Structures are given as C-alpha cells and as structure tokens.
Length: 275
Length: 250
Image 1 (cartoon, rainbow over the protein chains, first blue to last red):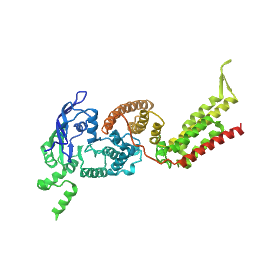
Image 2: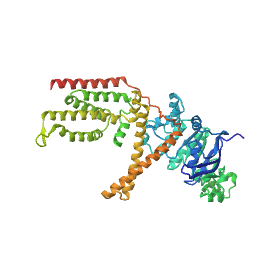
Image 3: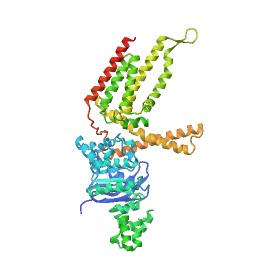
Image 4: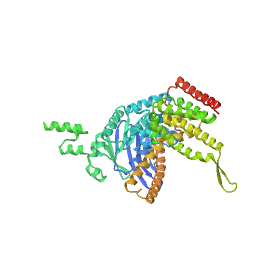
C-alpha cells in the first residue's frame, strides 16, 4: 500500500502558555478521499487543521507527506501550502484585497505563477464557485456566504491537491449549504482530496467517506463513515449523537449494505416500502 | 463614509481607467492652487460638480454631503482671516479690506480644491487608484498598508456598529456617564479585536502563500486617449478662462 498523502503521527501541541491542545493525535489522509473530522466545539479541531498546512509546528510527534517527515523551512512551507490549501472558518480572516478578483489572484501570484495564467486561474476558480459575476465587486460589500465562497476560490486558484476546510457550513443557510456541497462534490469528482471539520453528525454521515471522531484534543477513532457513526457507545462518550438517517434505517431493520446516505435515498426507500 | 464608498463603486464612471479621472482631477487642483482663485475657483467648482453629478451620475446630495464638512470649517474659519488683532493699547479687533479679500480668496480656493478631491473620491474606488501610486514611485509597503487599512476599516466599522447596538439594547447609552463608560468599553474591545484579527489574518494569508508582499492582479481597463484628451482640454480651457477673466476684472 502506498504511503498516505498526509499522515499525522502521535502529534501533540502545547500552546505557548502551556495549555495542552492536542495529544497523541493519529490521522491518515488517503488520496481522493473525503475525510470529516467530527467533534464538539472547542475540542481542538481548528488547532489540528492548522497543523495540516504547517501553520503550527507540533511540540510532539510529526506530520508526514507522502511518507516523508514535513520540514518547516521557508521553501518547504511554500511547497506544503501549494499542495494543502486551508480555508478558515471566518472568511474575513482570509480576505484582504479590495475586490474579489484581486483577492483571488493573491495565492497564485505568491506561487510565482505568471500574470496571464493567474488571470486564467482566477476566472476558473470563480466559475467553479459560481461567483464569476462578483469579480469586480468590493470585498466588504459581500454577504457572509459570498465571502465564504470567495475565500474558497482564493485557495482553489492555487490548485491544491488537498483542500482543508474548517467548519465549511457554519453560518450558511440551507440554500448556501446545498450550493457549497455541490461545489465540493464537483471538486471531489475532479480528483481533489477533501478534509473538513464539523460538529454536524448528519453532514459527516451524508458527505464523508471516512470520519475521524475528535474529542478532548485527540482522535478517538478513524474509519469508514457508517462503521464509525454506528458506534453508539463511542458517540455518547464523545458528546455526539448517531445520525438520524442511520437511526431510522436501523429502526427499519435495514442491513448494513443498503443504508441510505441522504434524505432523498431514505425517502425513496420509504416510498417503496409503503407500496 | 459608507455612502461615499457606495458611490465610488457604483457610479457610471466606475469602470473607466482611473487615469482618466485622476489626471483631470489633479490638473484642476493644480489650476486652483496656481491661478487667481476668485475667477478660477468657481469655474473649477462648477466643472467638478457637473462631472460628478451629470457625468458620473452621483446624486447631488452625495456631492453636497462630501463638501459640507470642509465647507463648514472653512466658513467658520474665514472671519478670523478677515480680522486682525492689535495689542497696542489694549486688545482691539480691526477689519481690514485686504483681510477680507484674503479671507474670500482662501475660502474659494480651498472649496475648489476640496471639490476636486470630492469628484475623485466619489467616482474612483481606492482599489483603483492605490495601485497607480506604485507606478508613480510610492513604496510598495505604503500602498499595501493603504489597501489593508481600507479593507479593515469596514471590518471594524461593522464590529463597532454591532457592538454599539448591543450596548444600546442594554441601555448602555441611557445617561451621559453610562455613555462615556460604554464608549470606553467598546474602544477597548475593538482594540483587542484588532490585535486578534491581525493574528488570524496572518494565519489566513500564510495559508495562501504570503511571504511578505501583498501582490494582486490589477484589473486591466482600456485607457481611452480620446476621453483623457477631452478631459485635459477642458481643464486647459478652465485654466485659460480663469486666467483671462482675472486680467479683465482685477
């Protein structure tokens, strides 16, 4: 088996003040997979994500990329961030330029991409997020959902192999979530590896290939979504709950092979049963 | 401030090349400073007003409100220029005709100069003209700082507004002493947030490959030489008129 794209090994992180944020974290990210890091608010998910692009340097353990231990010199960090794109939860933390087009162009220009190709990448990223019409708008006049998409476009224009999103659906309404998920689906189908943190069990169940349950600064378990989220006792201990879809399917007595993963699938199943 | 920004981003001339607006604006400013103000000033004022309102389609009210604050200061200050104080044999005030002339000229000149800037701020968003500063030799870090401040002003203004509303909802501004207290708390809170925001922006930008330079694409807009030439001709015409009228009418 080939080495995972990203591997976190026995990672520990202690804030400069001495507070322990992460302890003995282990995590594997395989190429082309969708991994949800599931945990309650304040459990340290963001701190972990900030390790995945080299923002924080572990105080114990290590991170490996393609089997090689990560290094933290300037050149390596640039290379690392080209491969792993991190989208923060709060878009205002990432957007700084006056117009959307200018902002999205920032990442590719930092990578040394030519102006001509940057223009191409910008329009491609805006099209992927379906915000081409916003290109000349002032950043500060956008709505939260629009800012969020601009922030993702800014990372996308760097063409990362792995897209890491911190709570991507937080603060979005239903329509916004649906649009975002459909964009992410397209990216995934185009070959991107996705990692996202969330406290939403339903989202993880409907969306991830794999789930890592994060609790009190460490990953308790990582595995296939249906297996992990069927683990009632573990979920209870980590202050999570089983997804409703799974509970309904279990109440109906469905076998593990035919569990519906989205509401449409469940409804279709129920209709068929009613007949 | 919000209104100015809104017009700058949405006026009819928004997508014109910034040089087409900067060159005539600074041309007029130069004329205002160099030529006799009593004839040139009103002409400049008229032209900037027409350009802003009829040309770029910015409402007259917006132009008026941008001019209102500096105009108030100027009008309030003018009488003091007209009057001279003498300390010979007790303090006494004298009105002198030369002083009156000086006050009038200064006020007209300043108003006309402000109108050039009003035209510019109402028709050209900062994002357009800041990159031009770099081309004329301003240090990159200064331009970056200007652009960052521009972005963050709105982030903080929004925070301040939300914070103030929340305080007002709990009657934080019910009395003068409470108002002072609340304002102090809000200021302290905003300062903390500013530091926090800077730290997080640093992380966010690092994730996008930031290594010390904020380079972005500047949008390419075709420069219309015809429009630029017309505008400059108009500026020249105003200068000529201002100069000639002043000679005819000393």
